[in-house]
Length: 632
Image 1 (cartoon, rainbow, N blue to C red):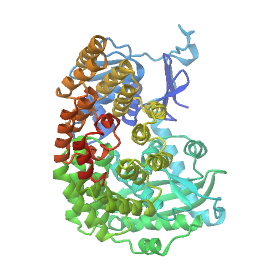
Image 2 (image 1 turned 180 degrees about the vertical axis):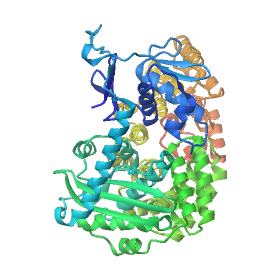
Image 3 (image 1 turned 180 degrees about the horizontal axis):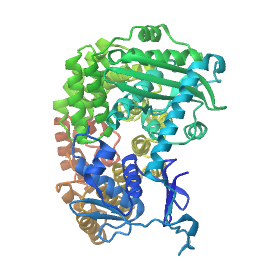
Image 4 (image 1 turned 45 degrees about the vertical axis):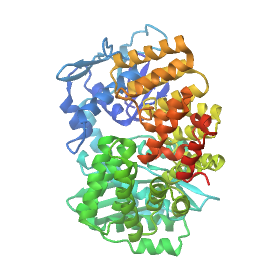
């Protein structure tokens, strides 16, 4: 196994894992890929252009320079390496980076200088050997798949459906095109297959969500280990080879209990028939594990339309941007989805993508709710007109109706429709919980929906963290604390998770802990470390001198100074919270009136936000609740 050890760390290339003292360390995919590149080239300068070509390729958009900086910063954080006096990762100004540890002969290892520190072991093969081995592995893999396809009918057996509901994970499809710029295409195929299988037979088959499935991209963990980690009984592996407008997809279904290959298929189609190809794979799996398909699902699979190849290309580009969950990503997603529907006005999935991008654009600072929500409504309505069986379309419509028109009966109906169509979609449960159930104080139901989302997407920091926020709205602060800590352990670099924990600490009266978490959130968001320290010092001095009032007053002053981390109290809704915590009720309600006039997304949370408990005897506050439709 290819393992590199240094200090108390080890990097396991085969498992795509960073460990410290034998325990896995949370690190995101891009920082991990950059760390592997730097270790392969340790002692040498790795230019920013080389990093760009290796990790992002040429098919990129947005502020890539900032993305590189962010990845470097996250590596330093997990390795506890100081930028101003680095031990390991050195910045070469104007050039790039160098990982400074020397290569150590594993057969002549000195005794560690301190407990837990192990010198670097170079177990990486030479580049030429690695290349040959990679080609050999690829050849073996292709031979195995080909063999399975030839002898499959004789060696494979039909699956016996397990009692209750089976769970399946669609592992990230392999890109066999030889071009890393096509990764977005294979990743998009993976996501589309997840959506396709999730709606087949929801009573008997559940599907692990994209975020958790994509963590296994490039992994060398075997299917048994993956099945244990995700709690699934079935795994779908696949590969995609694209040449011009032709696509070949191979897929094989594995039963986790005994590693039996239950089914394999190979499909060669034009890109225009890519949706039909996905339906064929879904039908093959359904037949093998004896799913019961409704007439509606059968008709949908049989009637899958063709799609303009260029429109499908734009659609997958849009998915890539959407999944980044960044300002630049959402801008790109809106542009790409808009091109897709312009090229193919009957492409329902592209309208869904456009609706979702527009509805969340305000959260990522791309546009205001007043600008984007009407556009989201138009796109979602068009998607449903084209295909009434798309769960994401109904969920998007529900979100829009509740936040644009405060039409809660329609929102509830559409949320329920989305859940019924695809109960394996974690995002459907997520939005139903925080977009409808929590605002009405139906906390037990909201928590149950969030737990379902977390089960479907167990490695998603946003979902795990939002479960904590759902506990906060229910005033279950102890459970919220445990959940936030769990989410932050899952991804130490998830900035909004630390910001939410800071907010919770204030309700627990732990203001010094709140200040520490706020500083972490600011650092992870890319703020200058010196500015972060000065703001932290200001908050601590105010707390020491004036208690909680000093803390809130200083935070109010800082809210007007940009930048601030995600979900900081720096907009009209957040400033209303600050005024409420200061006891200045009139100013708090004035700020809420501004938030209402601007159709801010968070205004639907006023009925459950703990900070507003002090406003509940104010007639103006109840008038706002009635205008938002949360009180009759």
